[in-house]
Image 1 (cartoon, rainbow, N blue to C red):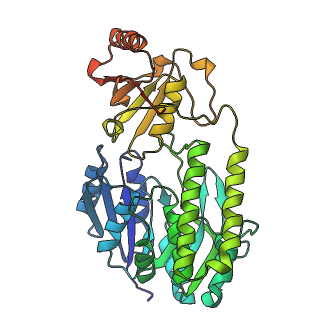
Image 2: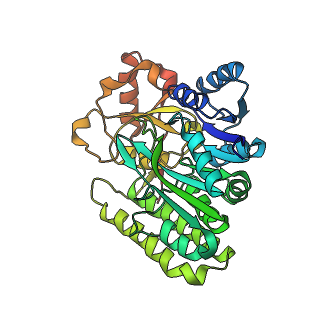
Image 3: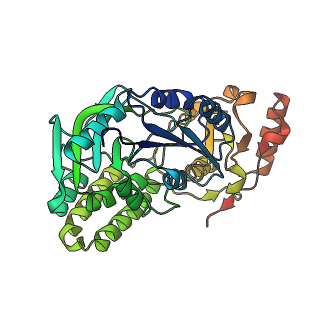
Length: 386
């Protein structure tokens, strides 16, 4: 047990500027008996090549290159080849403390636990799972634990809905993560956590932050309120399915309604004229945008609707949003900048988001005059939702 193999799964997609720091933080762990599984999920930048270079110098590293299928499938691919008795996860743009896995294995071994949960740091703030140095949760009363630590909106010890701040017994996480739908792109960790709490025998909570969660300036993390409400409704249905599968829905039905009602209420309070709008227009060929670094040109009605649409797809990346009248637009979810911020090497396409063809032609001609590659300028008549 004290020398157990730990498999660390790292999903990677187009994060070339972050991945070296992430991998180095894992390589330099004080606990050496680890296998590092780097899952390159169809990256189009240098991420996959960087992974291969690391693998040449460290036999503990395995690189799995695959077509882009999203985070859930990437993690499942890693789990399918993981040989460790314990399994941990690190996202490719984050990094960890040098003694993270030494300590997590120590906590698991000492307490014979099949799940260890610790805290994390982000933007200088600490997020800890408990107010005491250590809490041991025995799973004799799963309903109570689920109610207090997963759905306990009034509890200080509610667990963070992530799998990267934890260490799992391999049998537990493989069984539970398999239940997460392959196409899930919101709340996938929370769904997995629900299964883990209803399957595990003992959990350890530790009051220490080993994990550094990085918030990227170039990532699409902003989802407008209506879309978030829709996704939370989906998550509620999935959680209810979990409760029904374990025959505990009658005991936790009211608690799960209270939890998601609380989430929806807080989202509804965020609604205001600047942060929410009803979508009228769609870009007709979203597949054209997948895997591309996009400059969105236009912050009017079409531009905001395109932004709303594009943010639903993690494969699409808005690098910059510009408008001639950028000073007229102040959104809490994204900063619109002046057109002069467009730099030739920072994008794959400029998507003109206007409804009128003549206006689009005028914008295109102005961009060409400023030495923008005509082949990178895209305009298609927006598709009306109604």
